[in-house]
Image (cartoon, rainbow, N blue to C red; front, side, top):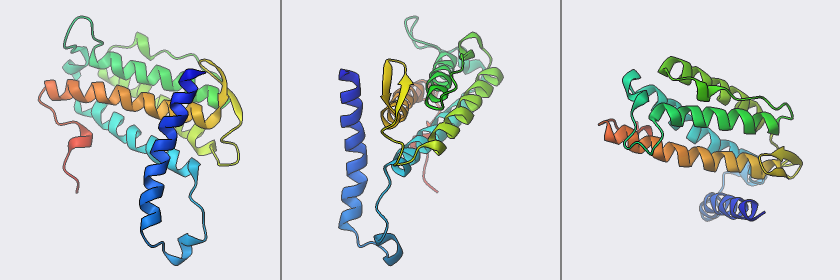
Length: 184
């Protein structure tokens, strides 16, 4: 219960900041008639972290997948597997068709990137199905029934936490993380 409250507060903060900026700027004539969509905002956050995770997985060389800064930490490949498994489990539940994740048993870059991409295929479907109208529908999550929006926002938060760890590993290997690359 406490976790859901924290997720909702974080989500409110994420959603309020773009809306505040949007309120200060004059809206184009066509857009002013349309209210902002919570579902679209969450989808945008998901797509941002999705791109960062896929690029990070691609940037790490094959031999870097076994890299772990200390024995107590996951390897880089362990992080990729963790994201893939968490997404496969969480997003398939949001779709009402739970799947058993299996990325944790993989060790090579090729296999882990394939598992990550498969997990994103599942999540793409879950986020595509999210609407403002069904955002509050109860779905089965890791901790029991929860609103669809809270579950998918929690996935975004989890992905961002994992990406943060992966970005540190990239830097320790002398690689610039995707989110720090120059904008073109």
